[in-house]
Every structure is written in C-alpha cells, then in structure tokens.
Image 1 (spheres, rainbow, N blue to C red):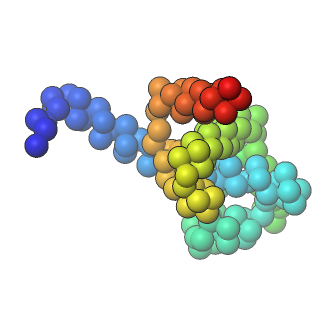
Image 2 (cartoon, rainbow, N blue to C red):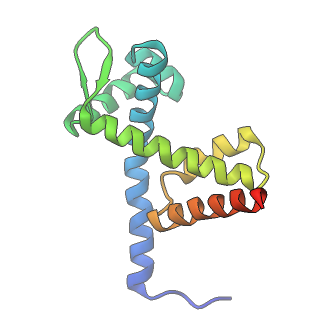
Image 3 (cartoon, rainbow, N blue to C red):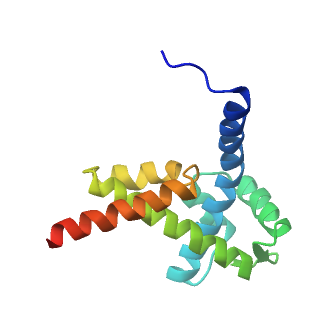
Length: 146
C-alpha cells in the first residue's frame, strides 16, 4: 500500500474534483446549446432537457444559473443563446472533449464507449494532462507517417 499524500496535497486533489463537478453541468449545457444552435438553429429548454435527460424544471433552473454566470441569454417562450463568454466556454469544452475522445480511440476504446467516457473525463482532466494527450496523439501520428 502506498503512503498517504500530505494533507495539503490530498485536500487540493479533492478540492479540484469538487470544483470540476460543480462546473461540469454548466459545461455540458453550454456545449449542448452550442451544438443545438449549430445544427437546428435553436436551443429550446425542452430540447435541452430531453437531450440531457433531466426534467424541464431542472433545465430551466440551470439555464437561470447560466444567465447569472453570463453564459447565456434567454427570453420567455424563446430559445437560449450563448453570450460571447458562453461561446468561448463551449469552444474550450468541445476542444477538450474531442481531444479526450481521440486519445481513447487511439488506445483502442470503441467509439461509443470513448464518447461516453469522455463526458466524465473531460471535466476532470487538467491542462497538463491535456497537453500530454495532445503530444501523445502527435507522436502517434508521426510514428504512423514514418
């Protein structure tokens, strides 16, 4: 058995995980809203609720939180739209998601499992690890070319 990390180190690790959990929902919403706007031209709360598998009131509450965070704008009986800040977050989340999926696929994980697993991993992975993932994929691509 490995020795326990220092209290400070362990507290930092758990704090990071708690923080990731609290932002994961917001990230999922902005990513989905961006996808809906890009594919159907609208992001209605009903569609958001269905696609995320949550109740309509839950979606409405979370959209209100997104509004408070200045990530979206919404008007009664209209769709939800991303602010500039929301667009930037959606882009970062989508890039992170694709990178995690690509690494999992490179490791031989089937597509559906990679997509599903990335939904959890993408919110908890650090920038250091993402950089390592990108380097891993670049190195793998270079090896295939050689």
